[in-house]
Length: 285
Image (cartoon, rainbow, N blue to C red):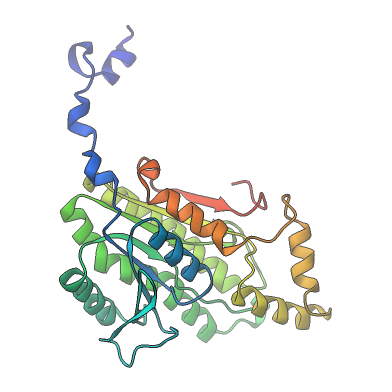
């Protein structure tokens, strides 16, 4: 055995004691714990809530837009079986800290955090305002940062947890028509890697899912804005972009929810620090 190979097995060529580095089985199966999903009121977020509820999680959907809507920040409402709604503004750290403290005290430990809340502005880059850039970063980047900070230390102390950030393939390349969104998602991807490294010793994984073109209200708004900018009928910008997808269809919210389900299941326990495209082959990196 070469010195390099022997070194990989430790002193004397003996194999590492796998019992020391393999997590306990109970730490891999988080069903029955709380899954906190920001932006869980509609679209991708609601689909993720439903799938995680089906998987056996007790789901908290945190959003500014819920139906039925709680009367205030401290009230909880049942949105669907297994899904509880709470109002929260992810740009307000104090609200997030209060929400997390309430969950841990009244509902149970948070085993899964999905940072899904997001916003977007469509504007040619040279006309993009500072206000729009800051507002997009406040929700997409700082919202992810604030919520993760509120939850991560508790997960690390328990030595179990999964964090999934909903990023975008836009974060992997320039997008001059919605540059603020692309830049914020690029920052989320980098932040994902940093948290993954920081939390790996505590058996907490952190990954990002990068959707492509998903049929949601957000993409309806993008289509409307692009049709005005490009001088084409409504639905034509969306049609053109779907035609570029190798699988020749737009993404559904369930495509994203199913992959989040995989990442937070025992099958996803050895994946961390990744920004994984779920986009029908639109991007290959």
